[in-house]
Amino acid sequence: MKQISARELCSQLEQELVGRHYTQDSLYRYRKVLKEFMDFTGDVDFSTNLTSDFIQFIMKRDSGFSEKGEHSKKHLYYVRTMRKLEDYLLFGTFFRTKKAMPPDSWPEGFSQGLDSFFTEYRDGELSELQYRRIRKNVQRFILYLAGNGFRSFTEVEYPQLTGYISSLVGYAPVTIASDISCLRVVFRYLYLNQFIHTPLHDLLPKVHNVWRTKIPNIWSEEELARIKAAIDLGNPVGKRDFAIIMLAAGTGLRAGDIASLKLQDIDWEKKELSVVQNKTRGFLKLPLMDDVGWAIISYLKDARPETDSPYLFVRLNFPFAPFVSSPQALYRIITGYIGKAGIKTEGRSKIGIHSLRHSVANTLLNHNVGITTIADILGHSSPETTLHYLRSSIEALSRCPLEVMSSED
Image (cartoon, rainbow, N blue to C red; front, side, top):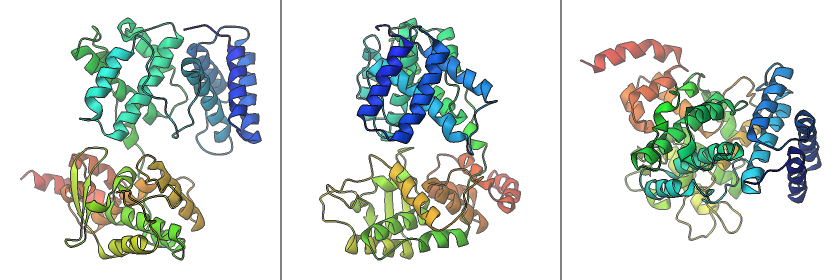
């Protein structure tokens, strides 16, 4: 990989930002961070070690990054700018968050094992969501290796793993945990198939369920009613969005599974939904409640455009693309109506479609539905996963030990 000075890379990135027509406000923020970075580095060649050191310097200067409040956006630009510099170094471009990913083109020295891994697993054990997540994390690791002069996985040893994990400063704990888990899957495959000769998967630190540390966000019945009331049912967009939110609030399906629903997955005669879950690949059959069914019927009759797409929910502008490739759009749909309903979200954890899933679990718990049954409804692989939802209900939590004990009898 050719060497380039930090200043020259910053200059090239700035030109790319201008060429992509970033807003003046965004350009101002990126330029400010780039200037600080150039002042920090001086006239030296760029490396990913510099970005890690710079982020740590900024964190120390500001007494740590703030996750919320007036300074959070400023800190976000520091991390984003460093990641864009790293992307630009390795790929010659950068990728907008959650919108675009590079093709499966790996640098020479990494391609053989990765091509084999993704070819074997993409159409087998990996869902589309898992595939995208693992690919993104592997690219991030390769970026780190390439920036430090390593050209293949066979050169990697324990110091490179610890150095990489240290370079993730600025990312959320859940992101770091996900990153390590994804790398473990890939390294295990590479080792067992003799692409590498060091069991790197055993050298990675064990990951605890850091994503289980927060109390799930739950919407009250009054709040759900306000969200639904904020939807304008007099236009096609409102009818579609109402059907999506009713489906999420009535079944607890994940956003990816809602986006992947096809017309053929609904059995109107039996009033059932059949779903192959994106996350677990498990098959799930759910009852279609009347209010959810009527919301979908209204959307199909009066809002869904004429299209050959097999997917239930589609965009209403030509070419009427489904949401299956961008389920995060469902997040924007519900958060938009939460805002219209005037519901305050400060101090709450995630407020997207997944929060409706938590609300379904909470409602079932409060109606004395057993943990095993709730696990089946939500498509959890184990009732232990469902116990996480109990933390939002003190009453249900007090019943949990008795139920667990009785299930062992």
